[in-house]
Length: 153
Length: 153
Length: 79
Length: 79
Image (cartoon, rainbow over all chains, first blue to last red; front, top):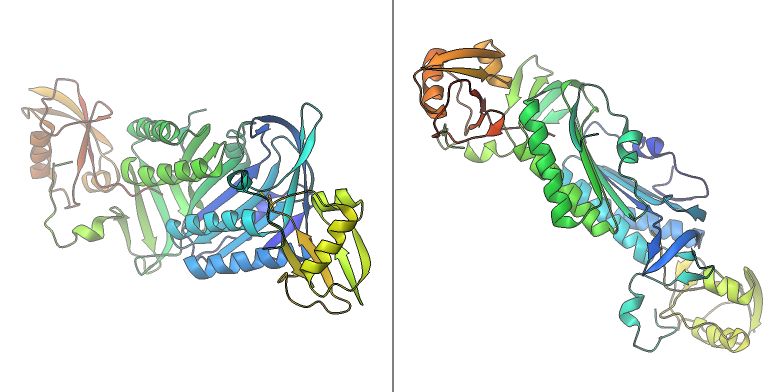
């Protein structure tokens, strides 16, 4: 099983977690992103995730390899949902197991942060008022009053 | 259900997690301590946890209240196993949900750190070589060559 | 002229109404290809885009080859 | 003389062979009570202990009252 993958179906958390069990590990940290009922002051009803899967899987695997290398964790993985999600649904899951908890926490945090910024996946929010929109990125607000720059990745 | 509790039985993780679901929350962090097959260079076969439950529950509740106050998390809880555990068993579980992931991670980390140092619970390790012993504490190694000090908490 | 496969995701997919298309183009780089397609479709403004060439992150100014695939990557929003 | 309930956990429980006992004692503080019981049982050395009085963390030097319960708390090792 790939350490990073996309899923069209709800996750089986016990299976995800089970893959990370290891007799050398005393600490296991996990993170879940859930669909909230609001974002930036608007009431969200449901949302859709769409991914550029081929590149996303490669980049996700790189992130996990980096985390394992940096923090010395024994096992780590991440699954991101795609498709239509309802309030409260699990959108992304990350887990990391390590001999000690420091490393498990650090790896888990690193993976979710990097996934959110590097893996090509997009979220369309459907609001209670009937409107909808693609959420650009977590950092877009910072660039709000600079002119959009294209073509310079 | 108390936010901090002891359990003589294996945990039902889906239920533990379910208590923390909240439509306001976009991030959920959890931590599990697992029984490792070694500790400080010795091969562990199984272990026992024993708690001073009355005080332990009070102190555990205080820790969770502190975490919620400090980090603004919506929900948090912790369950610690007591009794006899085998390799790979879950010894302690912590979960925290919050609007954003920063707070969820911080609260989860705070709770496990404080629980390990403040909740009166003790671990007896049974080693592969037949020996066994109560593990004093994570920091005992630091005090190894200072004379033991009694009565000064 | 090169034959380039362009795939669209998310806001770009909805805007163009296309999942993918084959483009016959004189554009030498991804940047030139983007300008050409922007002129055709009037892409929405969406901040800083990245580009992928043949399913790897690429350089806007590297030369494209016949048969390459290109994806324009709007700012991501996972998790 | 006070009647104090002393509970033992972990290494102290195993060492004394007792889960709890009622102690009739002239000890005025938890520290004095500990010294008295240490003289009786020869407790193992185990670093810095805390004390609980009536199921709350207490002060080694506060006065005990008749009917109080006391627990000596070796360094903890949860998780």
